Image (tube, rainbow, N blue to C red; front, side, top):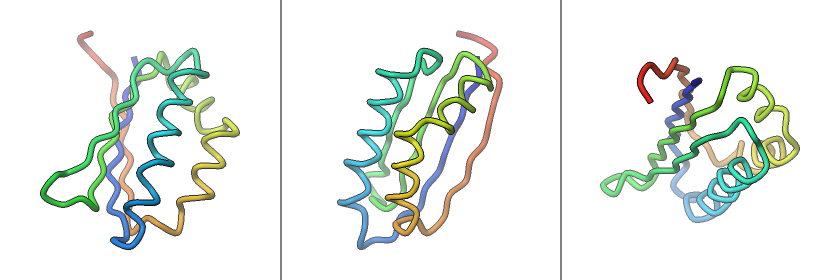
Length: 96
């Protein structure tokens, strides 16, 4: 399994607009992408501008298909100006 973690720091003025778009992106990924197995969206309760994603895909190719999907491209275009910083890391899942 191929795992992605993403840490966002949002611009404070855009938190309320970003979250529904992020949740829709996650739900669409799970529903429409056969290689997407898990897509968790987490928010730091002490710092609401910090969002953490945990995504599990069958393979790196499945993740690349996610990045190429129309719904991800639309999400990315709609939210780019809302993000102060973004850190993406990839992992190989060793134990199910």
